[in-house]
Image 1 (cartoon, helix red, strand yellow):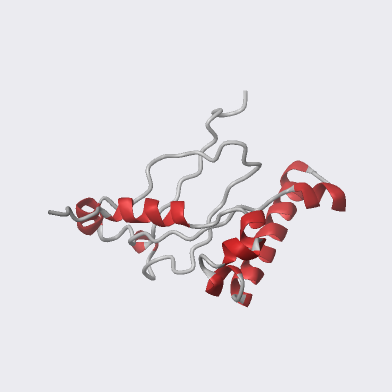
Image 2 (image 1 turned 90 degrees about the vertical axis):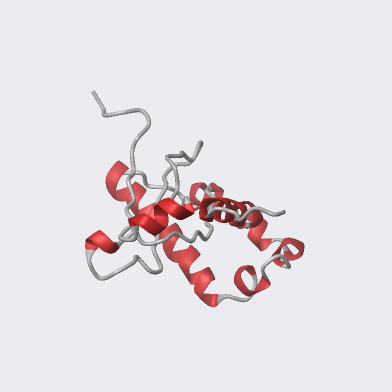
Length: 139
């Protein structure tokens, strides 16, 4: 008999299946995995441009990092899709195992999240996100 997968197991498998780095997504052979997204989607291409620009602007505003074009070209955006249930449905989340446990992105210069659908109209209905610095607070 086959057991039913928990939602977090499905989400983790979905993540592992995706091409997350831009260099992977540009590879013509690899694009065959999900051509509608990696090759054909103007919306996904625009989202990557906006996310990349937002990251560079954040670095400039917060850290005063003025990167040359050559330096900016060396940076690589990692981007992927994830499906989570709205936080407001606590019982369904508990039953499904949905949610992402605390995790980090080693070697990432910065991390962020974009919600295509943040959940319900009330803040309490939306999927919560907590960003922390594993190094702790500055002295």
